[in-house]
Amino acid sequence: MLHSSYIELNKESLNNNIRFLRKKLGGSAKYSMVVKANAYGHGIEELLPLVEDCGVNHYSVFSVAEAMRAYEIKKHACELMIMGFIDDDYLEWAIEKDVSFFVFTPERLRKVIDVSKKTSKPAKIHIELETGMYRTGFCEDQLDELSVLLKKHSSELLLEGICSHMAGAESIVNYKRMLEQIETFNKLCLWFHGEGLQPRYRHLACSAGVLNYPDSIMDMARIGISSYGFWPSDETKMMHLKEEGFDEDPLKRVLSWKSLIMSVTNVPRGKYVSYGKSFRTNRKSKIATVPVGYGYGFSRTLSNNGHVLVDGKRVRVIGSVNMNMAVLDVTDVENVNVGDCVVLIGEQGDESISVESFSDMNNSMNYELLTRLPRHIPRREAL
Ligand SMILES: *Cc1c(COP(=O)(O)O)cnc(C)c1O
Image (cartoon, rainbow, N blue to C red):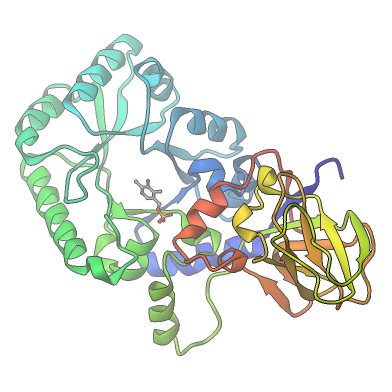
């Protein structure tokens, strides 16, 4: 093991999640798997081939850099969609490679027309519409100008989609705002139809849209977090488990994170462990070190707080998490040896450490925690 920890990806879990979410999508809507932010920390190089094996052939990213990585990795014919940032200098690349992208300003649209003329190839664009999130998107007073441009430049612009994004579909407190967004989007779809503009995909839903607002699904959904086996929120999870009779969780975590025991030491009673005085032994103790710290994705908030699995048992992280090491109290684990596997996220025996049980973090922190997993940690398929 060259690095001090590794991440395993479980294809069966991924396949399970995609199957579950496809059922929610219904027969005809397209599944776009969101693989931005290094595939939510899973590692795009390792994850994308597994997604391809699961039969998904539409991927969403945020930036050109991410699109380029996905483009290099993919083995099969697929569609790539950039939902966010493109520098003008890279429009040509996207157009050349048939990568579709969101357009949310008239200036960008004009630039795209210019570049398309230069490359003699139409650009596949998704017009992003303002429906109530107030982040990016064409507003109502820009629509007439938009329509004129789209019609006039139909040989430079392929209307691949019209789209918008939901501003908090995971939480019931946003219920009314979500209904209004869906309604606004539907009205805008009708307006496009009335203008004789026919997009290939109308898309609005993210994971929480698919799970909580079936009306938001339209022709395509951009599904991130749930593909990886996480509920967008606890309440979404509870609603579904209740509907389905509190059966087994239909979503399975794809990722596990593992390291190993680096050293084992006995410590007398009454001694401070690791930097400072945050932890003092109240008994004769046995401690073990794991070579992961906050510089390696294991957050400092886990100091005196986190748990990991050793020999099938939950053990506590004691003292402060250092830049490259964490200390465990393994006094109650009989069998601990240097080189033994330590599960930071995942299962061992009957025990399990979930991403959210990393500490007292809530579900919405899943996104942040996952995407902070450093890129240098090796990823591999779980066997
Ligand atoms: C990230 C993102 C998604 C996916 O959201 P999840 O909650 O992870 O499913 C969908 N659409 C846009 C525009 C996004 O930026």
